[in-house]
Image (cartoon, rainbow, N blue to C red; front, side):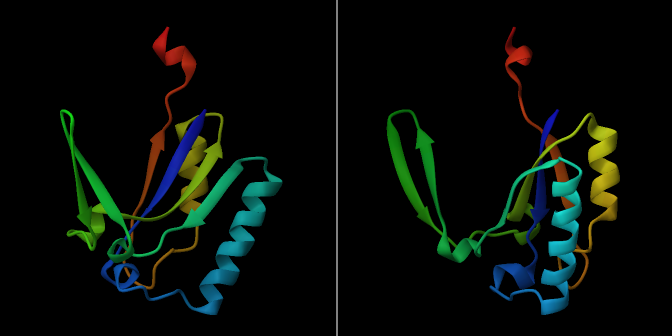
Length: 119
C-alpha cells in the first residue's frame, strides 16, 4: 500500500524559518530508519507558499493565483512517499517521527489510488 505522508505547514514554516540543526539531524536518522525498513520511496520539504502559485480551473479558463496562501495549517510543508503493508503500519511509523516543527504540528496520511481501485 502506498501512502503520501504530509507534514502540515505552520506559521513558522510559512515564514520560511528553517528547522534547527538538531531537527535536521533527527529527521535524517528517522529517514535512515525508513530507508532501512524498505518503506521510504521519496521525501522532501517545500518552500513557503509565498514562493508558489496556484492555477484555478473553470471550464476552459485558467487563472494563476500568486502565493502566499491563507490558512497555513491547511497547507503542506513537506512530504514522504511510503510503501507500507497497511494504514496501521503507516500510523506506527508516523508516531515514531520527530516533531517536524518547533511547536505544535500535524502529519496527515493519505493512501494513494492503485490500479486495482479502478477495476
